[in-house]
Length: 101
Image (spheres, one colour):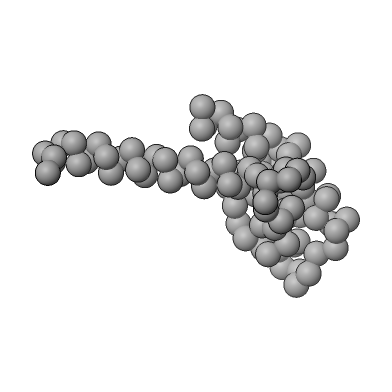
């Protein structure tokens, strides 16, 4: 078996790969293409993903709008589209892509 230094490097690498995978998965949620995911499922299910968190941190208006949306039991398609625009316009998707790179 490898030495402790190699094992620690492997653990660190696996953590990074896992984080990158999760960030890519979060981004895919906002792409309306054939990516085998339900479009904007995180918004529909009130799941806080990284793009939503970053968008909410950008300014108080985004935070307020997103918070109120997450308090509603069900969101209409128009509301989901509006929230998606807020998230994309916040630059959170680009910011995540930059982190990955």
